[in-house]
Amino acid sequence: VQSPFNVWAFKPATVAEVLEAYPSITCVAGHSIGGVWAAEMCRDLQAAGKWPSAGLDFVYMGVHGKGLSLAPFKDLPFGKVGYTIASEDGPMQRAAEGDVPGYTARALLDLPPSCTIFEIAGGNHQGYGSYGSPRIAQ
Image (cartoon, rainbow, N blue to C red):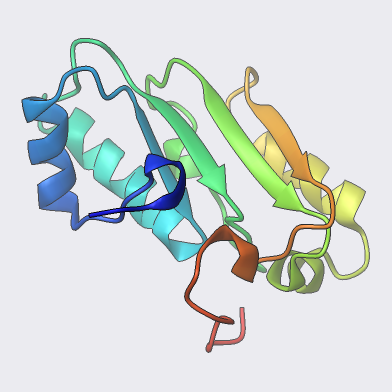
């Protein structure tokens, strides 16, 4: 399997198996709704008592939506948390309703205080992968 930047998508059960088999993997990331699913998988790992002994970092990549809250994942014991915004991200702009700085500030309230925001200047939602434009209005 080849993937740019060594990024792959797996079913949650497979992620748990990969983390167990390869303890050197210490970061989980997800894009768009996949970011929510990845955070849910991490929550389930913790609830099952299977949090990796080396710990985990997490990156939300372009995880945006009107009414979306990441607060349920705020207290997971991630070492580091990153949150990306792409300046031309259509779903983010729709969710922000014209106030991207305010939207970002509100999103930060749902994230751990140590979260780092990464802005991708000129980036768009589709640019996170090679799968085309989202089909469902967000």
